[in-house]
Length: 120
Image (cartoon, rainbow, N blue to C red; front, side, top):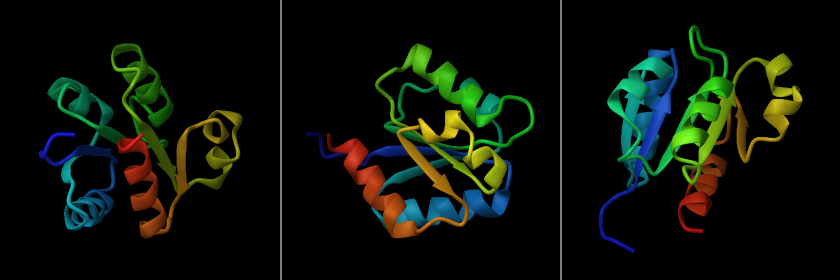
C-alpha cells in the first residue's frame, strides 16, 4: 500500500453537501474533490480517483447513468450512490448498489463503508 492519501470524488448539485462532505472526508484523511455535475467530473477524468460518491437525482446525467459510465471505463472503481428522494431509494437499481446511502446519512457509517471499500 502506498503512503499517498486516497482520492474520493463527490458529485452533487447541492453546494452545501459538497462542502460538508468534503470537510468530512478531509477530516478523515482523504483527499476530497467536489463536482457540481457528472459532466464536470467526466471532463476532469477518473484516472486519479479511488472512490466516487454521487447523488442520484441530478439534472443532465443522473447518478445511475454516471455509475454505468464509470463502470465501463473503470470497473474496479467503487461507486457509492446517495439520495434524499425516498422514491428513488426504493427502486431496485438503488437497492442493488454496493454502497447506497439515504440523506441524511450517518457520517460514521459512510466513513466505515469507504474504508472497507478502499481496503479490500
